Length: 292
Image (cartoon, rainbow, N blue to C red; front, side):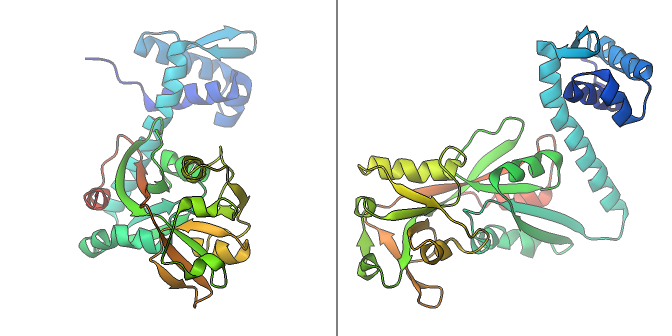
């Protein structure tokens, strides 16, 4: 049987690796450098590999050390989640399940995904928070967010994930826009329009998805990053005086100030769920079973 690393020593090693040395890591951990160095050496003996190359006051990671750093973070996060779940089970308080979602997914869409899980989990409180993709993945990694939801399908190292649904894209335009009177439009009809995005291309896989859809239609889109975040995506049609890709139903929106129009050729965008590996959750399982 392979040896299992001691979590305390693993914490010490990660602190040293992230600090690139023992001095600041020892201060952070309130340990002497000698005690910290001994702890890491014991971890190396425990696993049977060299993790660090020491050069004066600085250290560099071996290939084995780099692997342990990345995967060890996930193990520590899972251990913290385990502790939280165990304490919750011993208390009279309700379990809390935190769901984070990117700005590209509306609160209405999130509720539709979790409605059945809410009904089936009367002893659980649910909190839904909107987070930008980088904060979303960081929250899932450290256990602050139990389930992350984002657009597009993006491999996430050290996170578990699955596509749990697809939504048809439509286009939102101001109600007085010439395209508002159409029953259907083509993406190619947007070639001369300003398109609202929620993040710059290259910084958001959803933005990349939308830009590539325009390129497939034969044009390089003109775009502006929306200056209003956290509201329904249709709002961007007003605040940016632009067209916006949305998943809201076709028809009037925002008290008739915006029109949502179907695309002539359906374009489906996925919802990707992300969660912390090495953990289990009955509530999460209920949500994932909704996968379409």
